[in-house]
Length: 164
Image (cartoon, rainbow, N blue to C red; front, side):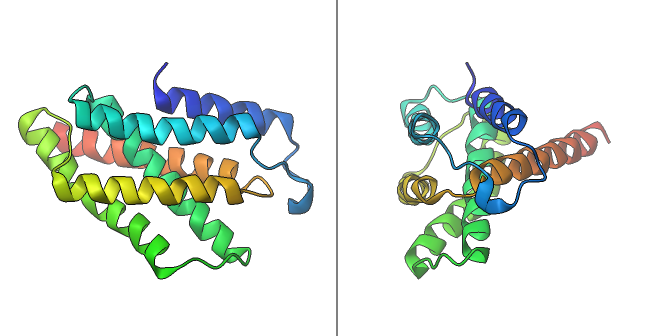
């Protein structure tokens, strides 16, 4: 099963299980099984990139995963969690690689990292592992929904620009 589909399925199941009008302290955190799945997904994507088996769908999944964790970090910070400058930089650095990697894919049809991008992706994935453990009040679910919506906007923009 594709990673984005799996994450989306997890989000839909969690959303259906919880009424939206509950106060945040009543909203469920990510389950231990979901946390394990989340950790496996982002490391699996990195392995696909480094093994040469990644395709365009994996690129989109990897980007969406990064947006999700970036949003989760923002939501946790708004809720009072403090992060080290290194953790914040690791995620920002990964987001800053997206354009170059996507352009390389558009130019060559291949999905992969150069050495610097690989180090950046691994550093960000290590932060992701910590972030998912900090989830509370359904913030990871909220971040995943936001990320899915943002990626849909990006896809529409790209399709519109290629059709023009």
